[in-house]
Image: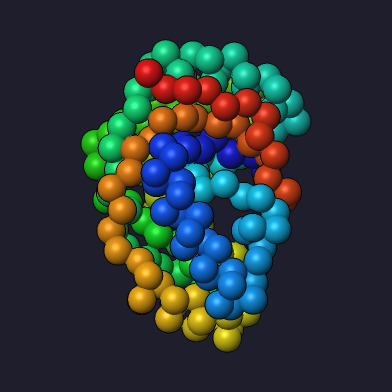
Length: 174
């Protein structure tokens, strides 16, 4: 699986890493830290045989997309294993999702996940995954005490391989 994701400014990264580290410490589940998964907001997920064929698309997208503000306001779960924070789906994020989808949909042999289409996309930033039942409870308790809305800024777009996370290319947005 490959992702094109939005990456945040340093202040937002620090806030999200502090939460990710806190969840790892209180729950005992260090998947995110052990696998060095950076805070990110996945725009699209897909399968392909040639991810490097998308590098030129990333260079086009960096010219079409700009930095933008996001407000991470709510926590949630994908039961039974994942905790996340979700942003308000504003015009900036919706526009980014459409432009990324349009840029990659016709790139060779690509199969885009049905959960990452512009009209069926649920934007989120994963804070913890592979949580067991008790770890999920501990993570939720931690978030009740330590999470508040975060005003962040998207400053980069990246193409990455998953499991383990590995950047293929990152581009700074204008």
